[in-house]
Image (cartoon, rainbow, N blue to C red; front, side, top):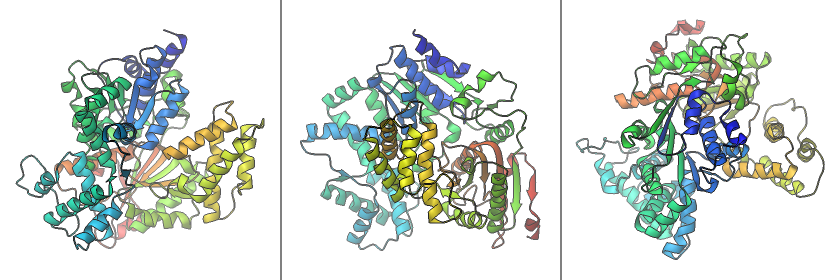
Length: 596
């Protein structure tokens, strides 16, 4: 073993080290929120490369978002394993289709649709159906669910029959009848076929079908990739599991990482059954439990544990108390954060009731403004909610008190005109030879585009443009020592391709679903009234359990401060969420809430 390989194990806790050293055979890492799972799996891969067990080009690390894949690549590159492929399932399948389709079919790969809406609208016109935009979006979601669940159109039509055997009954989107919903999907598929088009789910289906039907393709793929790692395995769908099985063939060098308590995409076809049943599927598997939480304060961890106590697959998180030796804080420090300050004891989570949604939003905005004035960073704060529609009063309240915010799930950072212009200008400038420090080179270009060292004392589009350019400037502070201007723009282009956005100095507003995989020092979760959490249409026990897991995800995004709130909603009585009663936190009612 080389010294560099040994160093890759240093700073890992005992459980992480077991995971990192288990290089062969089936491995299942059950990793609770904030337990350093990404650190464990990236060090595992890098350790395998450093010891010679893995050839980098024969390892495939799979995840579910482009941002997560980009983060994996960045961490692996920093650990000396830059040759490892880290991709989403879709990106890996599309790469293989682009290579094999011309060989097998004899023509170029059909075009892949950016979205389903336009084709669905044209299909509805063919059928003389009047379908509004929200219903078209719901039909698109139904198509995705049907395909990843590996149901034929005939199978799908039977799901509307409550008497169907083994398939949970579904409700047609909007005002469509079951027959109309199925006919619309048939027309959509026919239009795609006529135009030689594929949608995202077709990419997975076509890749799986090609491997199954063509032994030469299967042999080539299995020769290329020998070792697989799947992150967020609780989110895998039946179709993705089938494709993973095909990639593996009869081999078992698979490491899966997940947390059943963070299964929040069952409605889209994800199933935690593959994670929870991994030990039965692979009796010889090494199973490692990561339960030491390095993210959240002890009161937040205790709150999360209370919410999930006794639930199938739930892990019992353990919080750092401040008495651990410094080296135990390794995962937190490696993530670029300071370890928990023992001299600044964390505040317990709070629950507050308000009379209306507007008053709730105004109170949260006032608290955020006060924290920022006390020196807290806006980018380390987030307000989370169940539905996008809940954002409007929050946006108004934050604007009223002058707090900058960004909507996660809104317009993507690298799609903004000023950002596209900055990336192109920086790239052009980097092609010229320069001996200037990186900070000087980048700041000179951004100044020519209007960036200044101090922010403009105004709100609106001028400030938003400055924030975008300043976010690019902030990447210089995170750049490795000695990085050249050309290397910086190479990394920037890679971020642009993967939509790996930099941090902007603004409070984040996003849904609980969109918050998955992120974390902040201060988290406010609003709208915790019955009918919103759990959502009103969660009528079955399974649906309510998913809502519970969604709240768990939100709670475990918080590092140091967690504030929960709900409103009675003067327009119609609303009770606090049934989940709040389980948390053991005293509910404070704002004075206005007593006016119900």
